Length: 197
Image (cartoon, rainbow, N blue to C red):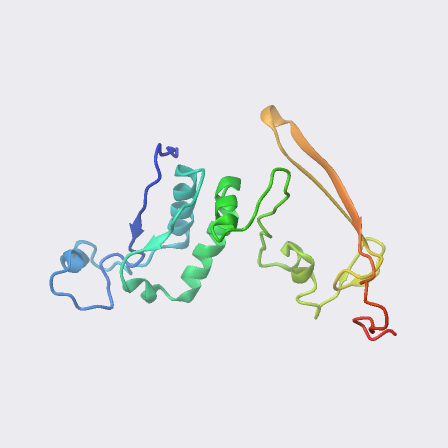
């Protein structure tokens, strides 16, 4: 069970336990390596996921800082931190997403629609956007009518619908929004972006 904090807090985590790439003679952690003989001293993916989830759940609104202790986190390698960022992106709540979006001064108004991006899995059937579905345009994907597609084209109509779980097994619908991609407008006498005159 996760408890929600009444105030925001900040944690520093050592994903390598007592292991460090610095040689500070005064460090509190120097003697701790002996407490766990044979341990690899690496935060597991399961522990990383639980940590990120619990940290975000404990502070449901506003900005949450995910920080790592000292210089030794570099020992975990870049893939560890890519996983940490992906988990944070995937798990953050709407208030946290809003704080993330507006921290640089972006304007948000009542009624604005925003999304958290995609939740992508490793398989082709788990790709979450047109850019991913077509692998950046290099790998066309089939539409329901069998035609192959990479990116949206002039005349394409996009319809977005959504639903979410509600109380007691019900679902909440958000209606739908639909739009058609129009041909780019140009100034008189200028060529179209695709070279048309």
